Amino acid sequence: MTPQPRRYHKDALHAACSPALGPVRLLAYALLTLALLPVQWLAVIFRRPLSYRLPVWYHRLCCRILGIEVVVHGRVSRHRPTLFVSNHSSYLDIPVLGSRIEGSFVAKTEVGSWPLFGTLARLQHTVFVDRRARNAKRDSQSLRSRLDRGDCMILFPEGTSSDGNRTLAFKSALFGVAGVHAGTASPALTVQPVSIVPTHLDGIPLGREYRAVYAWYGDTDLAPHLWSMIGMGRLRVQIAFHEPVSAARFTNRKALADHCWCEVADGVAGLLSGRRGQKGRCTATDDRAAA
Picture (cartoon, rainbow, N blue to C red):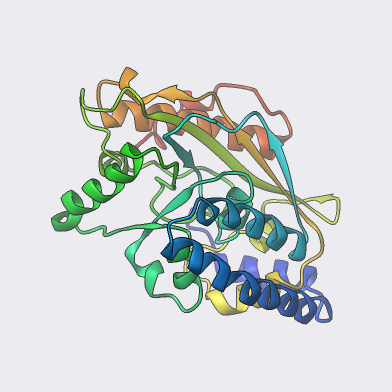
């Protein structure tokens, strides 16, 4: 069934939003960003290690300002390079994951042109990829060079955001952009599947429709959702870091994409149901990784 994002967002966000809280959070976010932006810019220009560490501190402060409580299950891979592979339902995935992973994101080219957020993305060493096949080789070389020099990258292989209630098929072509081809993956490359799910608002479990207070997907406009989101109460988001694997153990990119989808989908289902760690969702074939 096709989701109805506009109806869900209108009802859920109206109920959860506080008109007084939003402006305060927005001001605090703006002041923090303006204060740290020139520091990060200088760190990038002079290629200082701070340019990778500062975004982690920034995202943690942003989560505190926005009232997002991040609950972590499992351990973040400390191996370099690591390709973190996660489901994706909101722009809020960026500060949530960025607050726990010292790495850079892989984003679609359009994000680079977004006001403010495009600038912030570039300052975090984001790699922008074009979905058009003619640019696949260039994007693959750019991303693979980052991994080869030991950078950690965060990939959303669904290719778009979902409603947060399920894990969409993973596009194995995006693993190819990361340099994972049949028999060619670097033995040094570690891949860690990650599941991220919003579960509570002000201590109350989020139902299927009210997960739209976090999820931004479909034809929902960004500005109204963003404005309503900053007026929400305290949101709890849970992250499950699954067992890291070596990319070299997989014969091709689809096998790796399929494995990651299974781990992430199981993790999402477990966090949604409150029964984290249960297996079995991977037996479904209709949502398996797409070629």
